[in-house]
Image (cartoon, rainbow, N blue to C red; front, side):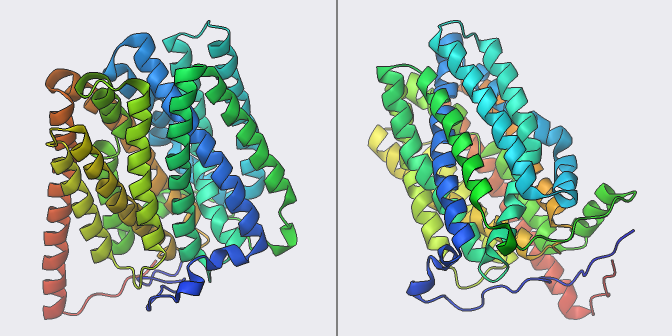
Amino acid sequence: MTTYSDSRTAPLPTLSARPPWRHTLIALSVRNYRLFALSHLVAMTAVWIQRIAQDWLVLELSGSAAAVGLTVAMQFAPMLLLGMYGGLIADRFSKRAILLVTQLISAALSLTLAVLALTGSIEVWHIFVLALLSGLVTVVDNPARQTFVSEVVGHRHLTNAISLNASIFQLGGLIGPAVSGALLLSVGAGWSFAINALACLVVVCVLLRLRTDQLMPAPPAPRAKGQLREALVYIGRKPEILWTLVLVGVLAVFAFTMPVLLASFAADVFRTGPGGYGLYNSVLAAGALVGAIASTRRSGLTLKTVVVAGGLFAALQAIGGTMPGEFAFCAALFLIGVLNLLFITGANSLVQLSSNPAIRGRVMSVYVLLLLGGQAIGGPVMGWLVESWGAHVGMIVSGAVPTVAALTIGVLLRRRRTRLRTRPEPAITA
């Protein structure tokens, strides 16, 4: 079995001082990353356009929030079941080649949705099946994409690149829902799916234009027995990774089920229709964009800051569920978006910076497994909760449970630090 360095934050350096303003976008000084970031913006905008159209189309065809939750489950369940194998593939093969294949398949799936919708023959089961197939693609695509960033930008600017990626994702989330809402009102969902298919092809073209001699790939992991178990043991020995992943998993099941919650607020609480659904997602994304930009100014990154950010984010989401009017609800969504991104960029950065490059694909596959697989569990659960008790109760529960989890983790870590002050910590060996 291969062994890896297991020091607390090795092998990558973490930022100990707040960067100067001129370095806020320093990762964009790398040509390959500029191209990758541009394609990422196009792709994320299109993904949000498709996501809003897909969720609303399911709600329109079925009249059920639970069906929206089931769609989320179909899309994310493959990651829950197979996610670590995707990380193993990312560690063994060229990440650029993986992304070329997954984007071509994603283009074909989106084009199929577009044809079905534009011809008027689409049914809910079609969306379920294509969501499941899309989820299977994500199993391989997401860990490869997460770890490919370090190959494009290098370790020196990796933290900045992770924050910029989150900013780009949320900028797409700001533009995409507004565009999707306009398309739903004017021409229906079909063109939203066609736009995403085209965006996948744009990503393929950009990947082919990257200068391969400037990429910094990690050595491929050799084939060996026990590599998945090895990654789990590695995670268990590193508190920075372990507790971050625990909190990510809890938040994914409960707090990251916004499609179900916002669709219900738009349809049943404020009765604003698809335009309102797009508006709520845009407000959430606007706050997240602010949070993502703020994360590029972060002067330090520790497990404590990640846990505190996660707890505050969850608590605010619970409070947001009590808002009686649409304006107050939107104000809460904006703040939820800010804290959401401060947490998720911190969690992503801490896990990557605390992982040895040779095993990072498998570690990040566990991160993605919990992030997306948790939503596969949480989607139907929150859909049932919303249908049974209403959107307000659903949102309060979605924030209250992770708040308790964050407080519990904080207490456990505090007790652990107290014990370590009274006796030496035993050496950790791989």
